[in-house]
Image (tube, rainbow, N blue to C red; front, side):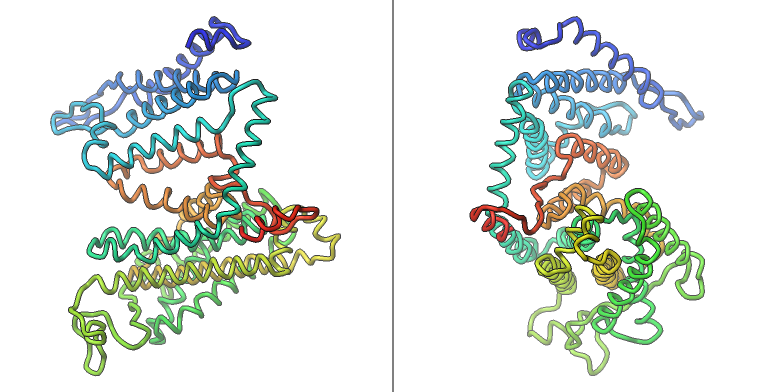
Length: 507
């Protein structure tokens, strides 16, 4: 490694000074946050010192900074990736540590986790492989000019491979989701987790219309989600309407609120638009909390009606007289899994409809108008496109799909409250869109699986979920600033070659 570093434009002394500076900085920042902890003993509160965590923080900082120096000086990509993986493992070890009954540190928890089961070992290896791959391919070996040329070649090859096989990848994904209940048919937690992931995929695709295609930053998307959920709950309880009648009405109500939000923000862009949409989401949440007579306030709404099998049968074990039970309708033995699997397929169909409508709209004039608005609003006006109608249509259609997802959420949970529709939900949905690559449908699926599926698989790490979430987002912004699948180009381009046009149509 010394020979590699001495071949760079900086001397080993300069590197040592830089590493020492960051080591001192890490000590100063971690000594009070990680090094000291109050412990509740039978004799009272005591101060516990955790110098091992401080040491881990310093080592992770030094190793990570050395990896960034190797990256900055365009040295070995293999060395850079190895240093970053080691630093990431140290950070993971530092924040995921747990204590045994005697209040003594057990070590190392990362390898403990990796050896608990085959599934966790595979996940651990895949996690290391992903971090290594991102670090390795994020920069090419060589000096700045060659680095840029080689990176462009790699990016171009990946782009062509992705764009020419998008339909195949999408069909494989759909096939996997269709057969998922047959693989995990008796695993209740797996079906519940897959259903939750599909809800966020649908929400991500809906927000992708507003953020990814139209380029409008919306931080209050959860408001439309809440409107759909409360619309179904209130219509079902007060008017006795079934889920199948309330579902389209919930979408219409949410679309109406999308238009209401769209009017005040027609002249706003960027940060100002984000602030207004954030305020709109908080207004809806405060209304839900304070309008007790209608929404139940903080108590929420309970005993929400579950959906029937298209009005033909019910999934309950005991059904009223004159109502057919689902198991009797098909002549099979009763199982509580029937309802869960039906709900899974229901949200899968709703998500696929969302994707299909979005893909079709992108090829229509309104989809071209969204992309023109995203690229340049002034040029959009000069071409005769009405930005007012374009923005309102994006808000309305995106809100409509959020309303559908909200109605499904209400009927799946059987209980809703304002606590389910906080700003954090909007942030997670927006992060899914940005992390997946704005405008990329497959990217949203990958991001939803990573951000929703993996944390739910490791619920014992719930205390550190937001920490890992934040670290992951920082890593994505550093190495994939445009998202996991950032090869999202306008649907149509001028002066394209025939091969590029075919690839664009396939995407």
